[in-house]
Structure formats: C-alpha cells, structure tokens
Image (tube, rainbow, N blue to C red):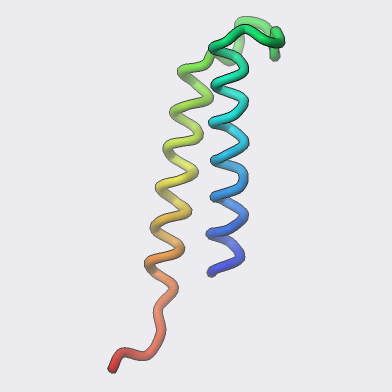
Amino acid sequence: MGTTALIFGIIGGLCAVIGVVTAAEVLPLLGDAYTWLFWFWVSAILLLICIALAVGRGGVGE
C-alpha cells in the first residue's frame, strides 16, 4: 500500500499545483469547466486518501 499512497500523493500534489496555476490565471486550463476550487477539493480528497493508505499499511504489532 506504500506505493499506492505514493501515487495518490503525487497526483494530489499535481492537482494542487494545477489549482494554483488556475487561480493565478497563468494558463487558461480547460476553460470554465474546472475552477481552482474544484482542483483544490480534488487535491484535498486525494491527499486524505494518501494519508489513509500510508497509515493503514498494517504490519505486525509489538
């Protein structure tokens, strides 16, 4: 699950970067369909999934 958490973390980080780029209006990404607020919510959800996967990796307790 560590690799899956890493993948979700990277995708969540990229969504946050796209949100900042959209909010700063550097590039008109995808028109009006996806606003900066959409990208930040997607980023937040993906990063929460990343945390849940990283914590829930399991293992043998002491």
